[in-house]
Length: 323
Image 1 (tube, rainbow, N blue to C red):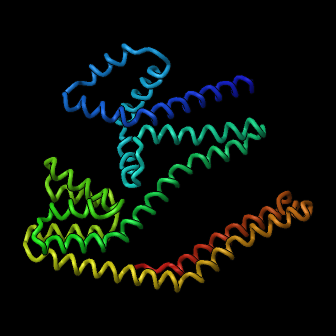
Image 2: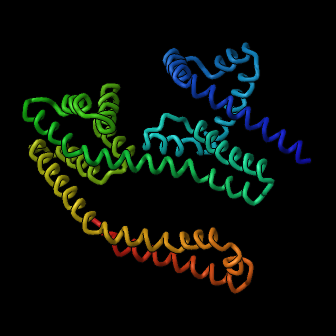
């Protein structure tokens, strides 16, 4: 029975890897083909007829993936994933992210179970694989947002100076997209393209804030929208917002410096108990076994874990200062 299970999982893993690599290699070509077909007005039926002319295992698997994509889109699962990829600036479609997530669940657990024959270890690695893609996406999004917030002040200076020089607001957006590096240059360029393609300025700016969950950017967009409705000196308003953002960044840096000692203390206190347990296990394995084997030892271990978590939360609450 184990042989059939291992063989089936190995075959499924191989197919998923091949399909993922094929989609990754041909993703740009597929995007271009989809855009051309949309511009020509070709229906989905003509796409299916063209696909049926081809043969091979890749086309069959792609049909299954496309069918799954349609089902997931109807259920409303793909759109939130694509919005998440857009915010993190990760060039993946929703179904591609789901495929990678599925591989992260199956492959590590299958490998560990095959090597160790330990079902519990396999399940643990499956759970770790299930949460790892979401963690990577969130970390990428936070880094990108932090970098973009640090660029806002310079972008506002360029906007204000270009408005004083006689440029329109749309031309100023284009100038920022050319002068500023990613990610803010890329986002302003996307907003500029949306306006050129017929989207209203208000809608394009609202799309910008939906892609970037930044309070400073929302403040800027709100100021621009109010100025477009009631008038006023937009360059002066942008200068004041830029000064406010610079002062906020400066104060945040001072607070980060003042709370650095508390953060390091919390990290050391939090890591010390598990580190000592590992050291004692390496020095005298039998000495620590009653802590894991006896009922009292397990109760003490659970109590120490709960106390550890409470202590970490209290330290984080103490050093966290809202701006």
